[in-house]
Length: 423
Image 1 (cartoon, helix red, strand yellow):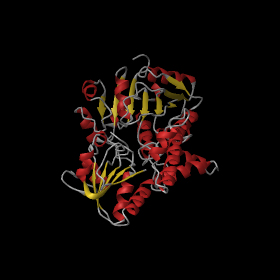
Image 2 (cartoon, one colour; image 1 turned 30 degrees about the vertical axis):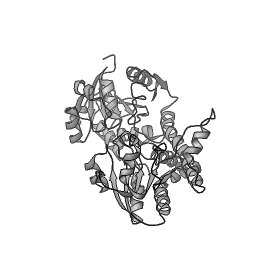
Image 3 (tube, helix red, strand yellow; image 1 turned 135 degrees about the vertical axis):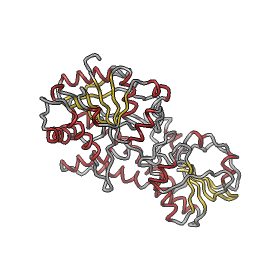
Image 4 (cartoon, rainbow, N blue to C red; image 1 turned 30 degrees about the horizontal axis):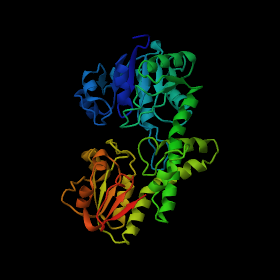
């Protein structure tokens, strides 16, 4: 196996599964997940995240397992478990620590395996938290019994252009030998090549600022959208003009959720506060984006003269054309509309109905034949982008309002009685 040996990928979600499938094209790989139902589905060729190609999933040499016994004696362990934030927006490292403890029990010190973390963390976690936990849990010594590496994940759910086999992988090992090993492994699966970061902490920091930068730029767009709404100017009209300048950055306003952009800034701000720095810009941007769903609901309610009605929200996932509901800010919009007295129905062609009801207490509806006083296009799924003017008018009462958060229906010519609202 080209000196790489056996690889265990721990965590088979949006990040781990595409990585494991790609690695299995070149190496012996076991994909491990604690979710037995997930393993059963993958063995049958079904990926509920829709990130893996169904045909490749059926023919892959990748072995799926939910047994920690299968993780013993590997040469490389790659950790791709979630790293969310808690209710206080503090880093929640429980899944990473649990994976680390499992690895500590599975390590064969004679093989001196490499443990690579891909989960988003703040600088220092790989070495100062996970490394020490490996030593403590397994009575091991770093360098002698195992070695550490970090390679930040860059999976963008639903993005078939920037897939794992095309992106540049940032890598960093605790020494040159580990970094060489990581370069051999990741370099075998991506045409985008690898970038050797100066240190593990530098690689961890790169991941944190990549998404924090996007968050701050989107927060600016959300703030200017709020400003322009006061003078009844659509931010989409403003952007159409501003984009004609060669160096204008094409960020857009919207509800910022998901597993990265809405989380990573809190990891960066946590580090800042640990070292005695108050992260004003980072937290200000995050606050603006966190409040955006409620602001939209309040703006719509005001536009309706404070009169509650029957509303339909189209799209619940954190972004278009993916089934991922994690950290979606659309729920802020839904809950606030209900607080204001509106009777709210929700629909989404991709979200898992079971997860939606279990995690959020909501049931999707089929809006065919129902007319609403307010229809909100919250997520521009392909199914919604293709709606025609007659389709939209059929959902609305005679004097209803159509709210188009992402500007996907700006070119639709609707009847004169319909009120239109957009960011």
